[in-house]
Amino acid sequence: MMFGLRFDGTQDQPCVAAESERTMTDTATGGPGLPQERRIVTSIPGPKSQALLARKQAAVSDGIGAVLPVFIAAAGGGVLVDVDNNSLIDLGAGIAVVNVGNAAPAVVAAIQKQAALFTHTCFMVTPYEGYVAVAEALNRLTPGTHAKKTALFNSGAEAIENAVKIARYATKRQAVVVFEHGYHGRTNLTMALTAKSMPYKYGFGPFAGEIYRMPLSYPFRWPGGAENSGPEALAETINKIEKEIGADQVAAILIEPIAGEGGFIVPGAGFLPGLADVAAANGIVFIADEVQTGFARTGEMFACDHEGVVPDIIATAKGVAGGMPLAAVTGRAEIMDSVHVGGLGGTYGGNPVACAAALGALETIEEQDLVGKARRINEIMMPRLLDMQTKYPVIGDVRGRGAMLAMELVKPGTLEPATDVIASVTKYCHQEGVLLLTAGTYGNVLRFLPPLAMPEHLLEEALSVLDKAFSAAG
Ligand code: PLZ
Image 1 (cartoon, rainbow, N blue to C red):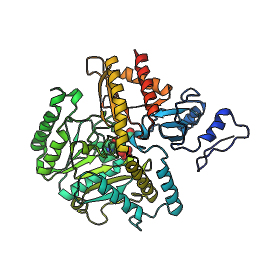
Image 2: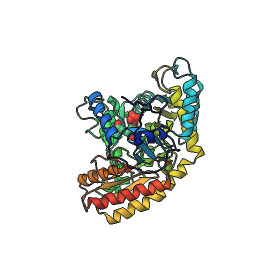
Image 3: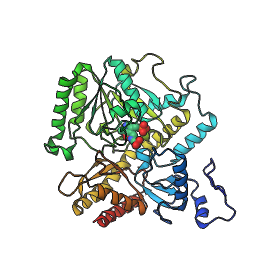
Image 4: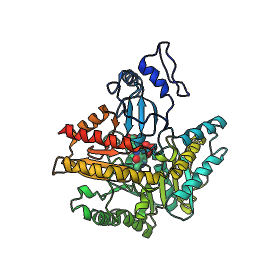
């Protein structure tokens, strides 16, 4: 007999329910009402997840991996509940997506209402208000008080592709400047923009042309010392732009204000403002990729806000719609309007259900002061991460902003990646019911991205598990 999830999220009832199945029905509705507790009742992954994993392996391309193959039945607040009724503390937020928490009430209500009205028309065929309202909200919330316009898409990669298209069109130039450790997506153009080969680019070429990669200010690894990394990386970038491309050939400088997949690298002070100045002085469009850093994550609405940087174009996705696929390109009105009518678009971009979700998510971010929550998460986490750094010399660096925090693990006293320790710490946390993600060009960065709706007691508990994981790793 098969027990499947119904579309309303409830479970088919078996005639004689086992204990764990009966408890499952209690958790068939997710959201913040779920018991906010860490609860391990089976091995991780448990038997039901293992059975589903076998089906995944038989049916789903091996190209699609899974960090932790527990299959999720419900989620909300700070927990993920799996099909075996384990409740894990979520330090990933679906890779910085559910900043408002999973199945956040305002998001769910907006989705349900919109889905019952209409699910799709294609905005380019017959428009609807939700899309316009999301554009208005993004024009208001993104950095800068200049006149802005927005176009909506489905994924972060699609937003970045379109940001580059628009910058090239507006400037009538082709070169795009990107940075080491940068990540911008998995489509052909965005693979070319992305720095790291394995797993993102390896074997998938040929890649798009006219992409120039510059040194990123990476304080922890900067040969000239952390405090010099901002000015030195900036000077090197300016020199390379002038000598290797020609500043008047450059359409766009594209950068993540904090490198996400690259390892939560916060560039040295002055690096981002310096790049923005170079762009402004040379008619180059400065594009901030805030796909991972956006929407309160870093303790400001956008990471650019920390240094008062005002990008010409900002690309967003992930946190904008509380888990629904939606992405946006927001920029100076004159740049966004430079493209011919019909030059931008796509069947689904700005889908009405995704837009409704975004309006619910943005309302939640503002009303529940998630910027303040991200700062509070930082206040709780930073001292504990720094304390662990004093106890465990494998923790070479603790960094990040707001609720976007990371530890870089190295062989003590060196810059050599401690890949064995990261594997054992991650495994320990997963077995103990704390979902952790890794990142980094060298695969040696533990990153923490709790939903901003994370209850403080769970955050404290997750940190204690992490501490024990380091202690067990020796
Ligand atoms: N720009 C800064 O972080 C997505 C990648 C997960 P999409 N990061 C998660 C994976 O391994 O595929 C990301 C990002 C930044 C662009 C993107 C791309 O966003 O919505 O995944 O296309």
